[in-house]
Length: 190
Ligand code: G4P
Image (tube, rainbow, N blue to C red; front, side, top):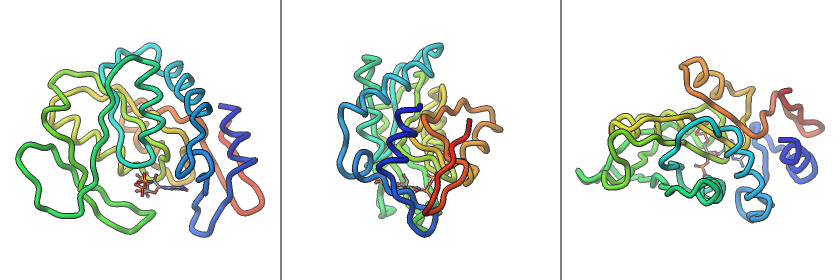
């Protein structure tokens, strides 16, 4: 999405450790009008799929997922992050390792909010190593629902998560895919 690439180039900053800071519109302050434009693009990319529900993960995936849910007229569920292992039987749980933060955490979704056979679109703000998406796919399989694909705003292509998921046969669409970045330039996949 050219508009997103331009926004990353004009407002993004690259930090050590391959971190792209886009807090001014995606991760802290939210550009609501622009988020709706991203949502419209997400809807276009998945126009051939039947989608019953959107699943994301707190926190920064929520605005993009919410805006897309409004466009599609479907509910949106966000998985909650849990540090403790004190988890009830009423939830689906998956354990995720974050390479960015070097931490393992559980994500949980109430069993009430995903039903067998539902077609679910996974959404997130960033796709790096793909572990968060795999965790959400795990939760969808536990619920015997169907993952129709994953849509992320920014994919850091050089970290390989998106391509790994594609090799597994998952439809992955990202609005901007970064092939390389440093503090002087950002190159997008064409
Ligand atoms: P993965 O899911 O693709 O494996 O990625 P990883 O665990 O490494 O990412 C963990 C967290 O770091 C996620 O947010 C992800 O959105 C974020 N992240 C990864 N790379 C970048 C980056 O280059 N820039 C920014 N701004 N964020 C990045 P989180 O910790 O779960 O935070 P939040 O969603 O609660 O804000």
